[in-house]
Image 1: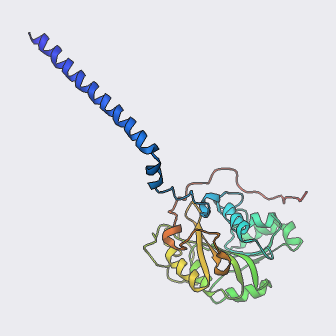
Image 2: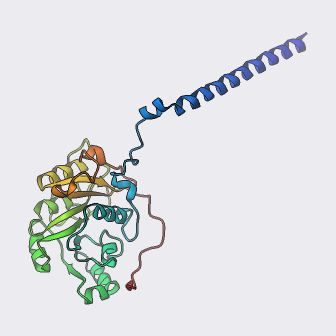
Length: 288
């Protein structure tokens, strides 16, 4: 009798289980039909990278630390260039920055870095570009008081296509102080650990050196406000959440995704992505 009761219970449990499976399959079919319905598809918000005006989807790495090379190329594809001159400070050893790809592509420009070791490496690895006058390199430490003097010292034209700022700390203050040169595009590092709700910047320090913590630079919202004061619109950030891209207001047109705010363009810190591949080397390349 006990065995018969056990079989009955097992049969009942199996039937209940199968009914549940059939119900789940029916729900799955209904869900597929629902998702395929045009009215539903139209109601779904498109993924953020689908809009062709959003720069993040165009990123790729050649010599930049992550995907900045592709975004810079796409910006100038949209707005064109004038004299193909760049100015970058905080270039490290010169082989992983935002303007080396432009240099290899025929642009000319100016670099400043405060490390004697890095500048010595640049003078060696990029000596042919330097010797033919395509690249000028200055070993000096940049401060609010020195930056415009250093710009004059390098003798760069007052209007250029691109400025790139990456000094792991005083970036905001350097852009604020910069008056000796005007660029059509500005690339500047932001602190992606600070969300768009924060409008903050680290306290200025003439002798600042990054301590490898997340205390550095400025929030994207703070840079958005500074850019607006200087006549620039925030048009995007790179996928890894390192650099923000600004275009001079008169060049923006309908080329980029509005509104030009930190809320629109913020990318979180994804510092460990896009680091694959070989380390950069320089021969230099030869035009053919």
